[in-house]
Length: 129
Image (tube, rainbow, N blue to C red; front, side, top):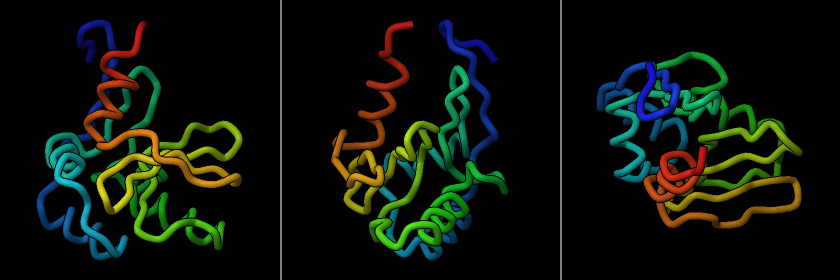
């Protein structure tokens, strides 16, 4: 699908039971804006960038991605889930249980946005083409 100059692929929203299952598996409540994303879209690919979510059974699933990272690194922070993998220098974008967005790398973790919606707007919707 092409929307306003963007190529977008959406897997389709999930039900509330799937969100509750994810929250139980991850061990924390997801922010309301991220839950809205999951219910409406599931996962999204935007101009080749894969935004993780639910409704898929591969590396883009937040449960699978987060569980994999937790098993790979004993320093992986609790109460965070993987929502994007930059694919460069082991840098991941995480959603924290506080609803904020963080950049995580072997060097540490840094808050980069106050919400999932702000991250999407700044990094993808308003990003110059």
